[in-house]
Image (cartoon, rainbow, N blue to C red):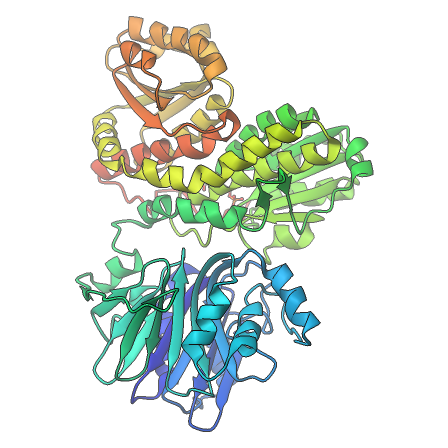
Amino acid sequence: MCGIVGYVGGRQAAPILLDGLKRLEYRGYDSAGIAIHNCRHTNLIKAEGKIKVLEEKLGGAYPEGCAGIGHTRWATHGRPSDVNAHPHTDCTGDFMVVHNGIIENYQELKEWLQSKGHVFKSETDTEVIPHMIEHFYDGDLLEALKKTISRLEGSFALGVISRREPGTIAAARKSSPLIAGLGEGENFIASDIPAILQHTRKVYILEDGEMVKITKDSVEVYDFLGTPVAKSVFEVKWDAVAAERGGYPHFMLKEIHEQPRAFKDTMAGRIFPEKGEIRLDDVHLGKDYLQNLKKIFIVACGTAYHAGMVGKYIIEKLTRIPVEVDIASEFRYRNPMIDKDMLVIIISQSGETADTLAALRESRKQGARVLAVTNVVGSSVSREADDIIYTWAGPEIAVASTKAYSTQLIALDMIALYIARILGTMPDEDAKDIIAAMKKLPDQAKTLLESEDRLKAIGQKISGHQDVFYIGRGLDYPLSLEGALKLKEISYIHAEAYAAGELKHGTLALIEEGVPVIAPVTQEHLFEKTLSNIKEVKAREGYVIAIANDGNEEIKKSVDDVIYIPKTHPILSPVLTVIPMQLLAYYAAVARGCDVDKPRNLAKSVTVE
Ligand code: F6R
């Protein structure tokens, strides 16, 4: 996944593609490539690293040709390398493909293609696509693409060129953005508007389930059955900077809105509700090893540490293995008692945080096995761990972590279920229920994001306060810690989170008239208990905003505002509950005029102690 650009027209394609890719550089990537057609052959150039490296490889001479596709890759399947970079080709080299997204059933497709004699070069999921197009091609590129995508499961934005049909690009979209740019005697495809904004402001925004065939003089859109679709032209009014944010005022808001897609990708090819099964390709914890496991440590910093605290509740509940959660900067210096019968789960979005990496090394030195949860393929953490789960959240640009946190929660849910299924600590039916509920999370997150206007109003209300408190019980407690961190790091409002039962042991002294208290009450078995704590706050005239499950009418009687979240399995509710917390923090920060994407004194990746 990352950036796609494609061109057909009367000009040389290579400089247009390279320039388009550079305009997507802000999104982050680990390798890049282009494929250029001229009348006789196709030139394919790929390189690990920055576009500069690709240009150096070209040696100052751009391959000639007026049609081509280009890609910047953010690795998911297979480490960053020249071979794994896109475009990918089939056995004949006739078909070139760039792809954003994740093909869930690529293993099965790869085996099928191998049985037919196809030879694979890369470790990617994408490579099945050019081989399938080669298999289905019978004189019509779009038709071959149509047959191919009918067998793909997962998400994709695809661009394909073929020397058998020079001057044509076929492209398709399912759950990953793609546009067609409309020029004069030239046309484009791109994953993001900035890639082509300097050439045209007229675009078709493709919807899920749409394909497009472009030549220099035509742009034809079809559905996946091949029926023509009439599109209206979208006139881009944004300047280049707004276009980078997809029209959102900040990357943070864009990334909050990307969560439904990020959830889907993170679960892609890993959860199987019908069988109650979890498959984690890069995790190899055998039954014997798990049966002897004395303890699990979860070690991380900041937001990732908060995800770990949620993970503790869930892993202990489902597996009955004791879990200890540690802040990496403490863990590494406290001479922790670790041995080979302990598993250390390291969580790090960037995979480069200095303290977290040191904790990983210390754990391995003492003989423990390390499982890493990270968002960056090829990061130090991913290279040094024994087992890995990637959160396929895509690049996170805003400093405050949002989609990385919620996908870390999903990864931890999957780890808990994976271990519980191997150890047999939960009945089949319970596993099936949880996994079926996981499948619904992307749509539920989408529904939740529709109530943004209310959250904006409440965010503005709390923006004028000096102090905000968060209280919760059970899973709502570690979640409250994350809600408070989000608010303080971007709005600079003092925010504290407490286990709701702890408030009366001192902190209640700080609650007075109008002090905002945010109280998630999603854990129904603890509802009455938290309600008593809310009443303690109300008795001191605090202003309580509850976050409750849909249908909880009772809470309305005791609080000032209620934000409802779609009902899910109780262990999954943090994945949804965090979304209104992120939006409250975001709108409070915006109301205070803060620089939301670049808050003071914070870096995206903390590589110092
Ligand atoms: C807060 C935030 C930080 C990071 C922390 C760890 O929004 O982003 O607290 O969570 O610096 O970073 P990673 O996960 O990259 O190790």
